[in-house]
Image 1: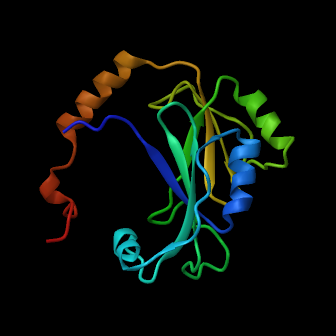
Image 2: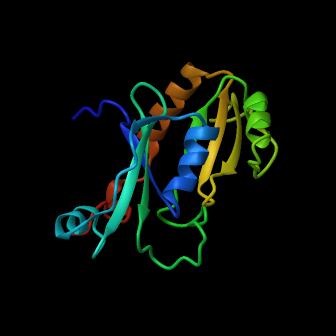
Amino acid sequence: MKLNYVHHVGLICSDLDRSIYFYHDILGFKFQNEPTGWFEGPGLAKGVGVPNAKLRQVSLWVDATTSFELIEYAQRADTAGKSVPNNHLGAAHVCFEVEDIHKTRAELESHGVTFYSDVNVVDEGPLAGWRWCYFSDPDGLALELIQWDYYKKEEHDAAVVEYLKNRPALSSLTPLFKK
């Protein structure tokens, strides 16, 4: 099997129009399609695995091959208006590689974006060469910037070989899928 590339990342938002202001106007993503009207029906509900689903969406280009799909559900599960914390099962984040993390961070801050911390610098271990920091979109969904200053390919290749040689047996782990 060969997976070609990540086509899109889908994020659930509370207000599609507000999220378009953030992702289009501030982050600069271009429209792949205009915002849809509301979709609903048994086929949609089955397709997304949400009973009585009603949603609208927009897709925005990140680059030539990857897009962001923003989806607003008419009725969302009760989360008291908060996004899923980063350490919860099902939580995710999207990371954007940038040329100059300090310049990009300053530009985002000028638009009111707040960051979790200063730029983190990693110069040892498996992530050596990373300069990274997290921030949130208007719904509190985690996003990340990374500036990848260097990559020690030979060291990483050797460490992967070692890991694969010594990793726990699959039979000792929770099964991949329930039967």
